[in-house]
View: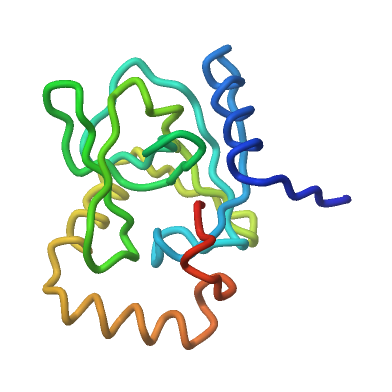
Length: 161
């Protein structure tokens, strides 16, 4: 199968439109911001548009025009969504509820394994991970990325997911 790479703003803009039309869309992930749960350039996610957004879910959202992230919802309040990448040690992004394009309901691993990322088990694991002290996550992520378990290294300035 041939692989076509498009700039994120173009590709994810089209993905957003397809989700608005009610289609289910599978995209290959990029970057390390969702490690250890999603490995960039190894794992894909299956996205769908949902009527509501809840903390713990993984969403594709536009944080500013042409810039998209695939991150976990921390909170939703007064029309604002706070997002955080599981592999990011600090910092959150914010967007409006209407800037959320879709919700990941499956993580597709290269082995063929499918992870239901909306299950209580998956959301609980992520909550546990994100509740760990900063230093624990920091050292684990450093080991994880150096061990080759994570996706390829990327220039963080160009990483839009």
